[in-house]
Length: 167
Image 1 (tube, rainbow, N blue to C red):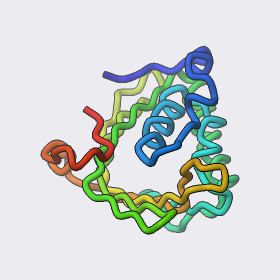
Image 2: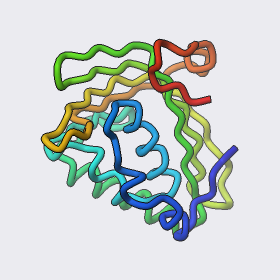
Image 3: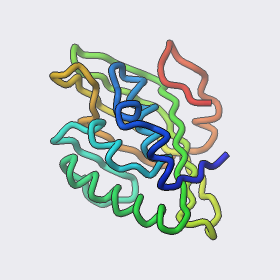
Image 4: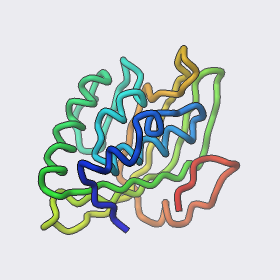
């Protein structure tokens, strides 16, 4: 199922509901909802100010929350204007916690339609996310990297110990 986002979708998910990440798994839910609504502002509290994102399609890391959001905003704006949509699903295979840091490894399935006239492109990637508990108690991404993975890696992964597992 592909979610078609509209400008009213942002109204369906109040900012607090999108950005509340009091537990690590909640960050995935908020991240998915913000992308589905093409609501870039909903992503802002999910990244620490000095976050780094190393996407599979880039030659260089994207440094700082502001730069990550600038790039996401451009993509969201283009998709919103053209009737596009994003659906993200996560399955965490391994979690390690070191005090106020959490390192998650897992797989993501994305279904992206750049415009209403384009087909849905479904991809699977493996990821490593590092989250840090912020002073206000919420969790935020400090490092995010992903690369291509076979669909079977996502499909065959079974739920692991209460970690994020989207169906």
